[in-house]
Image (cartoon, rainbow, N blue to C red; front, side, top):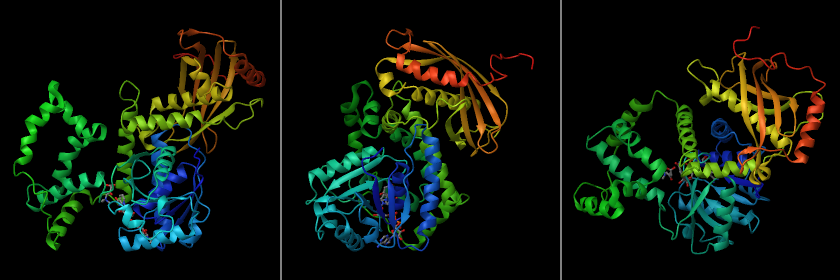
Length: 496
Ligand SMILES: NC(=O)C1=CN([C@@H]2O[C@H](COP(=O)(O)OP(=O)(O)OC[C@H]3O[C@@H](n4cnc5c(N)ncnc54)[C@H](O)[C@@H]3O)[C@@H](O)[C@H]2O)C=CC1
Ligand SMILES: C[N+](C)(C)CC(=O)CC(=O)[O-]
């Protein structure tokens, strides 16, 4: 689904590994170069966490995964690719050397983004032969989930490069925010540094420990920031008189000697040990990968809530996710099945992700309806009820569902769903779905559904398009050879 199909990641640590995951999950083939002896294991573990997070994040059809290849050198990794993301350690001399090597071997028009969190692009591009295509692309950890990338050009970066970069990041679901002028640490890290500096002083001076400080953030303004940022939040805090009143009331406090922001705390051995010990007490019971998974589940939950915010139109990162999913659905291919085969259509492959589990430790009931809904959607796409058809004002709406729960789907289990068309006419579509365990084909649940074709603007049932009906009839004809499921027509309380 991206116009870019091949990328290289140079450096595969915390950030480079997560870039590789984002690219691969967007369908881009990645060549990775990292001399670390355990690079393959580390990147593999990050990719596994990213896949787990994406399975929770969206039901939209992701493109087929790109491939991941470990290259023996920078030269080998960057030849033939359209996009290179540099994520080596934060040292100007090292980055310059690596970027010059990339520059020497990459195609002249390949985009080169540096993940630097603070270095100036003008300094990075100084010795490059094609400096016009170098820009800072500063991401946020975890790169595969957080959509922001700060785009910063240096004095030799072309305007076209920034425009191409913004478009390329949009294709993989990221928001490229263009920073007007280059400045050390750009925008995000300047803000984070201010907070961090203050936090270090508060712990140093025994005002609070690390856990108390984190609680202050996560039980209050951390949640506000995830959805409205700083200025929009403070506008509301000004009450009906808004921002001007807020500035008038609280602006003068900035003159008070509250902050030590201009002083840098001395990170001597004692302070490092104090913070290290408090952090161990706070979080040492969890491994890093475990903490990453907890963080990812929380971020996914926040993004999903934001997707449904603002009356369902989406808000902030949730709006971005909604737009990304809309593009995925618009480009969704039809299920790869033979519609004329005399067998139920295998339309959905999925896995029970951890956020689908209830207190009984198995897939909770509304997720069954979600999978059945996805199965109906896959059938609709197969008969031509796609994004364009819906946008043109027609669709099928589900008017009745009867679900039976027959077995337990456990977290992580692979499932598939099938559909048998029971009957159809110009408006009605009567189907029988089943969710199967992928391993062994056992039926775990069934759903009988009635769908009605509608004229959405008029808000009433209307005959479907003849081409849609013809495709549907071909499936119904093939399925007429099948035995009617024994459970079709059952109702709750009926004797077995
Ligand atoms: N960790 C974070 O939270 C964030 C880091 N960044 C930036 O991302 C960049 C990378 O940082 P991290 O991933 O955190 O560091 P890291 O230390 O986790 O990873 C750096 C990787 O680069 C590899 N490496 C070293 N020399 C290399 C070379 N010559 N060629 C290829 N690979 C080489 C190392 O083996 C290591 O795997 C830095 O510029 C940093 O400022 C940006 C956003 C957030
Ligand atoms: C610590 N850091 C400066 C490398 C952090 C970042 O650059 C962004 C982030 O993910 O917090």
